[in-house]
Amino acid sequence: MVSSNTYSLLTWLYTQKVEPGFAIIYFRITINSKRANISLNKKIKIDSWDHSKSKVRGNSNEARVLNQFIKEEEGKISNAYRELDLEGKLITAQLVKARYLGLDTQNYSFNDLFKYHNSIAKEKVTKDTLNHYITTQNYILEYIEAKYKTTDVFLKELDYKFISGFELFLRAYISKGNNKPIGNNTIVKHIQRINKMINIAINLDWLHKNPFVNYSLQLEKTNREYLTENELNNIQNYHSNIPRLRLVKDLFLFSCYTGLPYIDIKNLTTDNIVKGIDGGNWIYTKRQKTGTSVKVPLLEPAEKLIKSSTENYRKIDVNKIFPTISNQKVNSYLKEIADCCGITKNLTFHMARHTFATTVTLSNGIPIETVSKMLGHTKLTTTQIYAKIVDKKVSEDMSILRTKFSKNSHLIQKNNVS
Image (cartoon, rainbow, N blue to C red):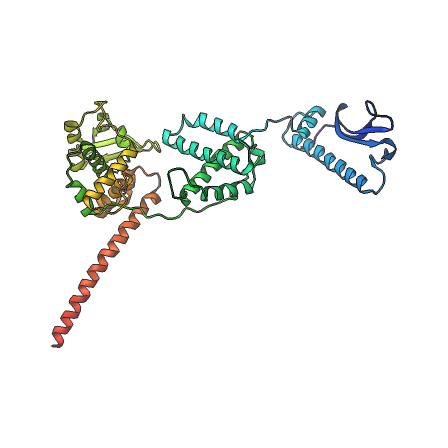
């Protein structure tokens, strides 16, 4: 679309309010006969000015520097006009002046973005997810203070160097009470959260493009530890007179037989236990993390744990299946249980979910599509991680069997020879 505006830019001298013989260099923007003047705050001698060419006379270094400055600023004003034209704005001389001076748009900072993000995120994500974002935001502000000696930066100042510096900052960071550096995959998560927040700024027109779009980090593959059948039986047979350890054992085993993460078990009520299509008891719930519907038929060990909970534990909310206890304490108590059961693995509550996927279901011939649905995975590829673990176990077991048959074969040959 061709612009219908008449646009011109004039460089001229303003002689008033200046000592005799001197002048201030000005620009005059004219659009559709309306004017706007801009001072360059550059004072020169009037007799050094070439009125016909609108520049300083001579080839001195001072003249060349000043003429180059004038040329660059003229280009900036022309660019401001073209930007407004491309944006389809109703262009005036005053609007071009405001764009050139940076006065037509508000400059937003990281703190502005964090406040906006958190205000909308608290309605859309879980408390735990929001806390992860707040942790990332705190790291960014620590980095800004350490690197730039300030408390905030404008989003328009962000560049590739900023994000690469932030990565190095995280890799060297040692938090109080923790002697280990932040792991690679945790750093990747922080960078991913920053990207998501920056994309929100772009959608709000606070930024024109993502300065980190070409920045990428790779997640390192991690082993999904799970309990073997023997280890699971060891916990099943573990008995304690300490109520907190008994409760944590039951919670952990319930996850092993249902695949539910701790937060979803914590939220379970009697309303979540319904009669399924087969007439048996099922759990119908939604994963708090993703909002995905989950339907899990209750295995007999899980049903016994529900009955045990009803009989043996006092609950603040009688509708809840299990009493409430913090996830942090659960993992701490699991370490005690692991020691008592002779389990050397780093036993965490999430290992129960891995155990359900591997030892309880896939290893017993349950199709991967069924396991994926019960785990509440939105992608089958997520569940296939567990299938690879099971394949590895099959390979190890078959290797033992091959060795056994190989020995038998050698014995048969030896007997035949003799």
